[in-house]
Length: 491
Image (tube, rainbow, N blue to C red; front, side, top):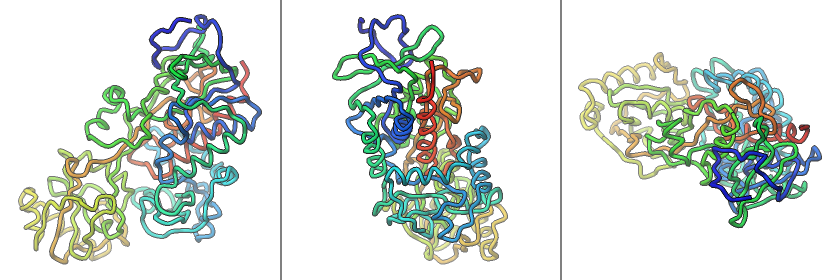
């Protein structure tokens, strides 16, 4: 066939395909954690599988993660550590974390099957030490398994579900076990017999007149090749944080904060655009994760965040991503963490953080920050009075983190956007059934097309409710379901 200008936003008509260069039952686009789990399950179901990956190796953005899976409901590790987590509490937390547009069917399924999924991950060879690490950590610096990695113990989530730690981290010494676990899954994909094509960029889908997806056009060795998918195509290409045009259209705030993308470099939205090209609907495209880790050390959680009006705006013991969401919404993105001599420290993630003001009194700090006269003094007088009584009537910060800030000298660390840029990734994507079928605007499945991971809009779909491990948990679990469903499809 001639070589037109292929684009993800336009499918090639099936009638224009003179021949197929290759074929398989299931073609998977992307070899991150969702694609790996989809490939394993599709092969276990007896399907012939081809995985096309644009990079030279597997892992995608999951390889850059801390390696936590958000799983609850009474795992063996939770029980051994003395936490009586229930499926009902796990579900209640996920429902609240999903925000106004939560996918209840998806949450129900993940809540019920989370324990079995944890065992499945171990069965694939992912190691979990099985021990609990107390305290507040962005990622465990040890090889322990269980950590607090969300807002479970913070208001308002603690009022909806009994708090329990649910971050289950793959075993690796130090931070960042994502690469290890994606390597384990990639080896498993090869072991079960899936065919993998690296340096293979999928350019677009191939679809018939009814938008039934028949295959893909993929560039291999500089040449476009056509691969037939006898049963279906699964899109697991990640989000769109690397696509500024899509950010301007769908999530302009994520672009405006000048954040550093958390990505392997290929989250360009191409898979989402392919889904749209055959009528796929998208949702929550304005939503994104953003953070600037405020701890460790834990003493920083006892600090107080204020904006340029000298007012608090969040309970500081909430998940660091939730704190960051509230912070970037403050006027001009200007916020500071207030500390006294007893609590002062610098966040491990930014030891060179800007100290915006110091003083022997809060009045001096207020003046140096050029805040409205009396505003910061009023805020700190009220906070210190309440903290001494063990209460926070304004934001319900919990007693373990309430400490009057009364020991001079005092300091303000700058968490303003210009001084401490955040990191981010997108949460919106294609609308799918929990089993992976991509839906059109009427809620009708598009024949032959499935999606999972950040290319689909999953459980993590509200920046205010995100917890570490939700992406890995969602991508691996629903990637598995998409692989199973595609393998069982009939044309």
